[in-house]
Image (cartoon, rainbow, N blue to C red; front, side):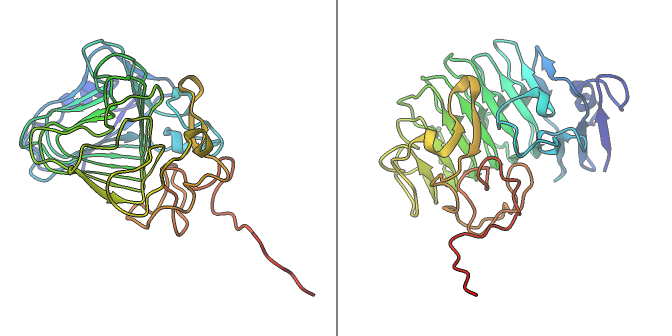
Amino acid sequence: MPTWIIDPAGAGDYTSIQAAIDAIPPTLTESYTLRLRSTTEFVVSSNVNIAQRTMNGNWIVIEPHPGFGFADHPNAATNALRYNPSNGIAIRNTNEYQSAIFIDTDNVELRGIQLNNNVGHPVVNHLQRAGLRNLRVINCILENSSTANNARPLATSHAIVENTVLVHRSNSTGVVGHLTGPSSTFSNCVIVNTAGTTQAAFERGFGSNQYTLRNCAIFGYGSIAPGGIATGSHNATNLASVGFGTNNLTNLNAADQFENVNFNSQDWRTRSGAALLGAGSALGTTTDIIGRTRPAPPAIGVWDFPAGESGGTPRVIGCIIVS
C-alpha cells in the first residue's frame, strides 16, 4: 500500500495535496495513504479535488504525518479544541465557490486533520449523487466560519463520522446536507451552530436517506432532524426534545458543557461537571478525539475528560478511609 508524504517544503514525495491525488491511478489495485507534513497551514484557493475513480474496494486516506496532527501536539490535552493551524495539520479554502475538499468517488477517509472554509460552501463536499458511498471522517475538526447561506461543515451522500467537531455560524442552514444515498452515521460528535438557527441540524434529502446519531452533542438548532429520518440514542441538546431515541439529555446550556462557546474563542473540550461526562453508551469508538482511552461509560461528544485532565489518571472520589 503506497504511503506518500506531502510536504510543501520539498522534503516529501509531493509538495501539494492535489499533485499527490492526481498521481493516484484511475483504477485502484491497492489503497493509498497521503500523509501531510507541514508546520504551516495548507491554504487552497480551489478544491482539493478527489475525482471519480474505480476503487475496487480500496481506499484513499488523508491524515497527518506522525507527530504533525493536533492530537500529537505536546499540549493536546490543554489546547483549546477548535480550528487552529498552530496545533497541527490544517487545510483552509479561501475561494467563495469552493470547498476545502471536494470528493467525487467512493472510499475516502479523512483522519485527524483540521478543515476550514470561510466562504459560503461546505467545508467537505462529498458529491451528492446516487451511487457514492463510504466517506469516513474520523477525529477531525470541520469549521465553516462564514455566515453565508450553505456555509455548512459537510455535504455528503453517505458518511461515517466519528469523534469529530462540526461547527458553523450560518443561521440559514443545518450542519449537514444529505441529498441522496443511504443512512449516514454520526458517533461521539460535537455539532454546533454558534449563531443559532431555526433550521434542523440534519436536513432531509430526496431519497430514503436517514441518520443514525449516537453519543452526539447537538446545540444551536431549531430541531435535530425532521420527523422519521433519524434514529439513535444517548444524544444531548439544548432543545426540550431530541425527537427520537432513548437516554437523551435535553434542556442543556451549551456554556455549561463546553469550555467556550463563543465562535471567536471557541473551545469544545468538555467542562468539569458537565452533564455530558459519563452519559454516553459504549460504541466502537474506544478512544476520544486526541486518542485517550474512553472510560466506561463514555462521555457524549468528542472529549471524555474534564478540560485540563490528561486522561487515564486514577481519581479517588467520595471515599471513606478508616484506620
